[in-house]
Length: 238
Image 1 (cartoon, rainbow, N blue to C red):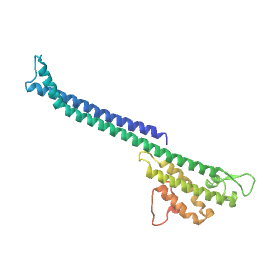
Image 2 (cartoon, rainbow, N blue to C red; image 1 turned 90 degrees about the vertical axis):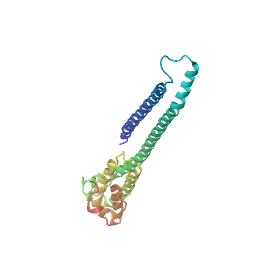
Image 3 (cartoon, rainbow, N blue to C red; image 1 turned 30 degrees about the vertical axis):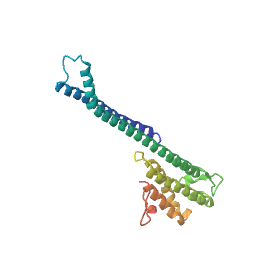
Image 4 (spheres, rainbow, N blue to C red; image 1 turned 90 degrees about the horizontal axis):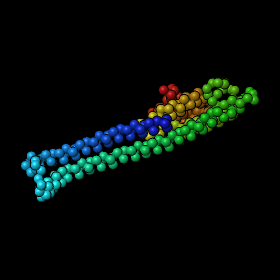
């Protein structure tokens, strides 16, 4: 997902530069029209024509006329160009700030997710043999629940649920603070898959962890309040 940001920035920059090119071209053409109109009006008023005057005073009058009439209009057009350039720079700075915020949240999410995977794949003592199993194997029904040492399985799942709560909170923070152009579904889906695997083991962990599961589900769903608990009655993953 991080790789999406350079592509997004390229699109934004391309659109911004395209808009800036249109504005600057419009300003330049408007400036030419102002000059052409000013000179044309001077000629129509009979002050200038062919043959061109050889008198310096008439050229001085012409220069004063052009400067007085077209100068203010050209200054106004230049101000528009400067204002647009400042606006473009502000937009690019805002996009860069959004990218930095997204990168910080992504590093946070990826760090917690690595901790979750470490807990899932850490060796877990078996109850009936020397070969260890893992919480991953138990949650994915690769081995029977009874195959794992129950005294070790419970604290392992509790640790997993604590990390999952942190992960779900990070997803909610990510959703609330990162631009809409950046999609968080892949991170939400990761948390939802693990949460759905944990729900059937609430009896092992203890019913006092039911609110934690509910909070995880609410964070992933983007819900701040609920009238009644519902996470245990359905899947979190869509």
